Length: 175
Image (cartoon, rainbow, N blue to C red):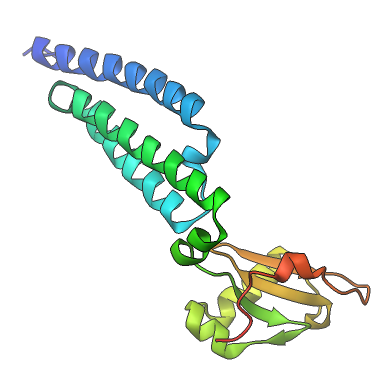
């Protein structure tokens, strides 16, 4: 019994060549469309990144049947991503309609329980994020924001200081 089937070696070689080609192609696409192609700035960015990952995996694992469709799909998604980013960066109205609004989860040491419910964030998750940010007392917290990306930002200090309004201007403070 042969350890390596010639057909298997051919398939492995096709996968290796496809992986190298797709890798170089992705470097090219990222160079042309910019770093935002794989950023996690909005829910749309995240969805495109997941879709591209799925397409890439399929192209590498089945190079004979899916290499060209993968290249077209990736180019199309990257182009849409660039167009979408341009639209968002040039139009406040488009940004308000298309993107989610950050939600305030804590303000000046007070947990906003209704906003936690709206964001589907548990108090245990919130406490975990406070610990990650090295918060020792709730009174240190000026704001905790559930960002449009799903990340949680913790703004805290030991000093009695106000947050600049521009940092909080797009954050939804009420549920």
